[in-house]
Image: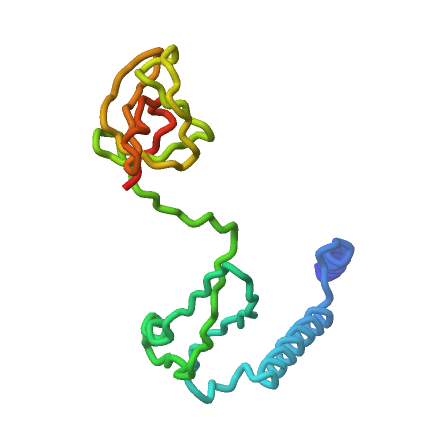
Length: 201
């Protein structure tokens, strides 16, 4: 019986060695030693790079800002922030982190872009009424005997000449007419078209 069992054991051992999953015992031991050597090397590397040392001081909060270069231009408004307001707006550090107490540089900001024309306020134009002084707004304004384009021209008033309104308004020939009179010469009086008369203060 012993002769029968030994060949079967050898046959089983030969079958296991022939399969692709069989590893000799010495190779498994060698692989374990290689893995342990790699782990030990990594631990030593971490310790030499400072991974095992504790920080020597508490961390600080440092704010880094870029410095602005001044670009002087005409018509540019320069805004300068208030440094005390800037320091108050920085939140205080909590849980052991201390804020850096050094002064922060103050940046200047320039507003650029198209500039708008200034607004010119003009007084409200006066309306025409009897007793108002008017200025002639035509090179040669025909002053007529009565309202209407078919009436006789008495004289021609020069540009910017001043008159006082003494009558009107009247409508004739689809035009509004006012009776004007020269304040220095009452004989120079007549009717003129309203569109060429500008009220003066």
